[in-house]
Length: 143
Image (cartoon, rainbow, N blue to C red; front, side, top):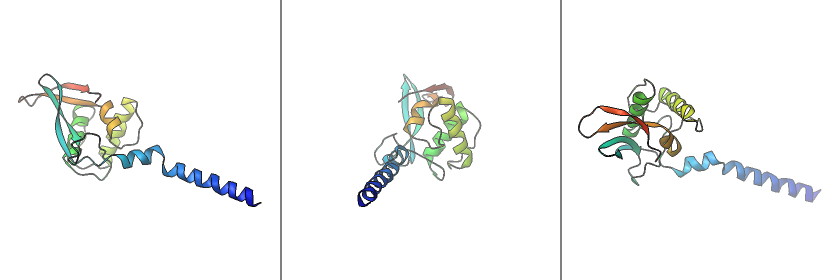
């Protein structure tokens, strides 16, 4: 009886560990929240603006409902320009979450409504040409 109980408790603790270390939880903890936007060169004189985290300078960051920053604004501009009409207010609310889910679905990546590196690499971004301010198409940068 004691062996069965110990075996059952061991399996239970292993199962709990698996839940605590699930991929979603690890990914969420692995990336800081994007808090600004930066210019990213695409090719020649073409560039775009993408969210990044100022603490490290990395574009490997994430945003979800409740975030408010220039990073959210850059994401909203990209979605509004390359996918569908959404508000450009810098607030990651329900409308932005739905739009991110639609982008993720269109890009055939995991659909969770959270912007992160996988979504960044899969989505299209508007391209600008130095000084013109006009959009020269939308492309997947893949990086």
